[in-house]
Length: 197
Image (cartoon, rainbow, N blue to C red; front, side, top):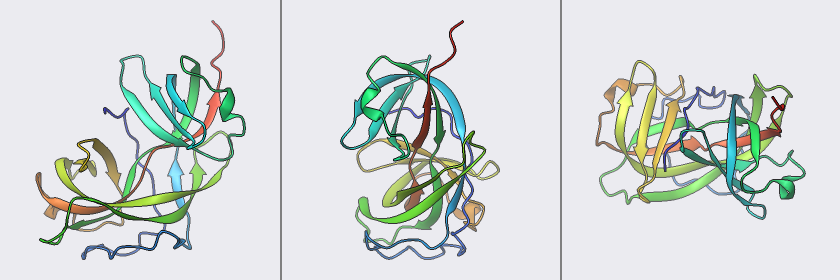
């Protein structure tokens, strides 16, 4: 699945260099410090909605799709339907941890940690609890200067991420490296009907 253009998010809790692969986290563990997330605004069409799981797939004018979790502060998600056109505010994928995978690591998601993300640059301030996904993936491409990487997950999906500044030693990572990555996935935090022309 193609991802719509990504923007940097800032992390305030990734204080270590992640030189070692993280241990499998407990799904219920909660991070003490919030992640400050910058927000992107885009106009897109709703491709599908799963109200129960709070997941929406959006399509831009070029046909690219992005699947994202919808923040709980959006109360009337059930009113969002396929084909609706919206201006969407969203925080996009950020890697807050990156380490070379151990040789015996099996590809896949090994767990999640719960964190709080807080708005930075959003029209309305927000704070949302979400999961940091911990997965073993392969680096498909990496740009050390821009601190961006595209990872291929075991499902075959490519996940573009901005790598947080607190992750040190990014220049040591290469294409085709198997890595353990901790990342926050896309999250929609606002839907507004675009003004009529």
